[in-house]
Image 1 (cartoon, helix red, strand yellow):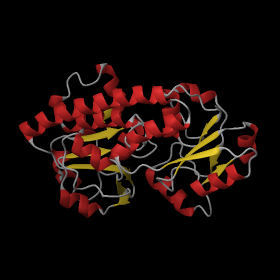
Image 2: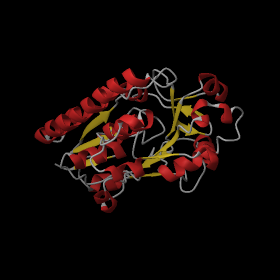
Image 3: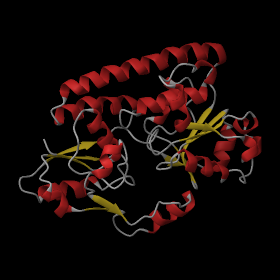
Image 4: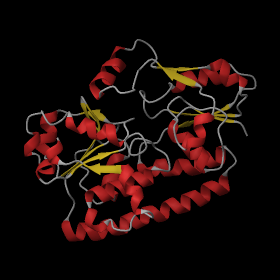
Length: 310
């Protein structure tokens, strides 16, 4: 089956299911095998080495679509199935544009539009996408493995909460302006043994800095969408001049974490379970020993930001 993927989360899930896409989006970067695949999308927004404020300004200034789909190249690949998303309007090609592009091709490929808004829905998409690309057995195996890992975190979280309670937790998926992570983020905080009350019930949304200060998180996780861990750590430094920063409990106790928001937290793929594990390590580090199969793997995921450095 020829499958084209227009979003990173679908691409990495397809490869995990044993299906190599014939074409991918310009944002697809995992696993490394996708680097050699034809690119089907582009954007007028320059993300490289730009600050959160600069990228936000670019997005606001775009007239029309921020992402373009190369329909001619797509047609040349003759896809049987086209995977896109409707969860976030600023993350990929608009779903209606994808539907129109598919309708213009002969034969018309099936369009699978992923639209998860909760942690459970993300995991359910493993089975759904597996069925769409004839990889049901691989999807069942992956789902079983993911469920076991979620159960392991859940069990540890119960013990951690019994011992120390649920820390007030804030997860930002952008810093300038501050945006609190939505959709599945509150689910993950709750599963990981944190207090998710700061996060929105729906999509990610801007939040007044004063509201974050009033909440006074005991743990602050900064995972800007599209930023790897080094850039996430740099984004934390842009918060230090905001009023009340030094008085935040998370800052006073050294519980500010920079997390790879490009690979984790913001991508609704099977790796959201890895995000859950990472979040648990931020919230209850004393209970996270041995959680990761390879302890060295934890370093690229997250970084505890030294208060002295910011």
